[in-house]
Image 1 (spheres, rainbow, N blue to C red):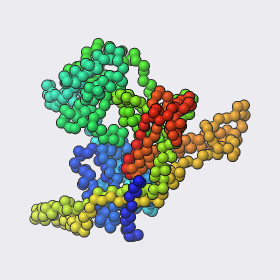
Image 2: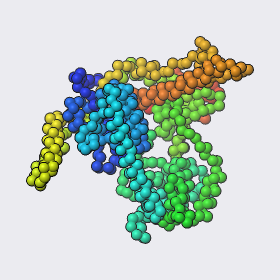
Image 3: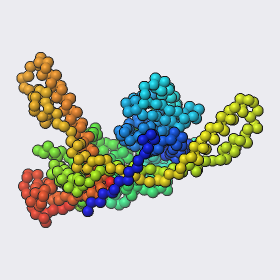
Image 4: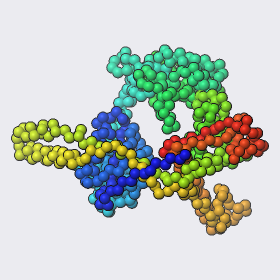
Length: 587
């Protein structure tokens, strides 16, 4: 039975501004710009303005120098929904951007959507407001000047860190980060800091792996053997040495342990750190005379390392592939029942849509009964069953309010200390500065005292669409050809054979068709990605599809008679049917 949660609507006065609280942190352990402190500053600024915070964009472990606002996981999603709020509040400018280019893009977006950009602490500590609701050259100038300062600060930080890391590399000292497998951190015998030395437990595992490689075993079979023997993968091994729990997040799922894979083994066996070399971006770091800088005692001698590389090079080379947006509707949704791992869409000769197949071996897992199925059959089945289950249900949007307690920020000892400091201000200028500081703290305290405590809660709001309506609305409109008026573009356009290359009109129409086809392809990819999210976030959806065991790619229909092999022959009855799960999680 489908259980759809009833929405809880919250109405705000028409004159009350709605604020989005922006929080960003490059490293979670950076206590000086902690999320709690940013949240408190943003909430206080919203209260001072009489605004209500309707949501929060919290991006942790996200660098502003490497990702612009539109690419950040939470902030980017909010920027695509500008009608939900009137202003965005950050603690400081560097929490929003650290480059002039990003600030220009954010300012342009704010102008187009009529938004206020507010920083709780601007230059000098006073709040700063950039009102982009109306064209203001002054606001744009201030915005770019502050962005320039943030960019210079980011550049200075980057130079300091780069210089420090380079100095440590030049000395062969450990500079932090993931320790290469086979090594452990040891005190530097030549002075301060740390170096790396062989970890004999990990070295024993490496010796086993290298023996298997030299004996002709594939990396995939070696990985499966390590996993069957419950040998910790490098990431888990280092976590255990540091006293942390194993596992983590992978493909959006929390797992207890990471598996060895052929890719993991290749990285471990290809690195020159096995010879004791200090490496940076995969290359050996050398001193001024061109000699390799060593991190410590080597695990392999050069001749041993060269033999290993020659053996690996003799295997079938892995072709370099560019990752691109997939049109696989059921990526992360179709799960092989035998291994519990994802099924991936792969092309097949004679089939324009390809098949979904179990790829457990690529993850170092041996599947007792790998599943395979025609992609068009499985996708049609998933769409039909999904819409039959939840098509009439109303879609909802969940807003999580983390709450706010102004109590911890009301530190009266700061005011008392400042009051006690009055007599120490002898000059007229000093007393004037003291008065400004007291007034600022008084205003802040008054604003906090007037701010009510808000308990954390979740609000579910209807979007106004059903799942079926939203699913259908995602389908892009098929373009109509310019070269052949009235005919839909169903394939990449081609110039007719024997076409007159000097025909300007024909060439312009051909180029227009090419542009339309490219745009249509992009829209189709985006539609499939959004539908894939719907399948994964539907309200408690768990679909079941029948898949027959065997080497052929098999399909799902209305009953056992619909199951066929690659040649199109019927695939037998109920006794030959096994299960492939189509996974969905609660909304």
